[in-house]
Image (cartoon, rainbow, N blue to C red; front, side, top):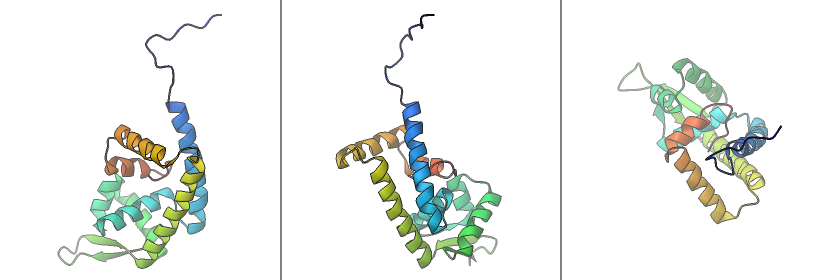
Length: 161
């Protein structure tokens, strides 16, 4: 049986290739984060807290697009490791403020260093300029914003950006 020609379709399809590379990045990322006691969702939360200088628990839930109950569990994990600190807001005692601790900042730096090595391994065939181009294209596809990147990375199945 002869195969039917596909009309008006690009010669190259990116989905399967992107999925393959994402899987490689995810597996390698998980393997370097595990010894640090972190999962991708922990990394994203720590990154958001560092970049924002802290956050309310509710704002963090909104940024990560996670249910409040799940954020509480995530923060419990991080607080048990003394990577974050939660305290009541002096302005509104119903709100919790969440901040990265010095230990959290150090652990995040170690994780980012380890993840840079993973990217070097997986994307080693690209030079610096090609990686910047790839990053720009991926940002464009993701909506061009850091929030889109954080949104995707908030799920445990995807490595952080």
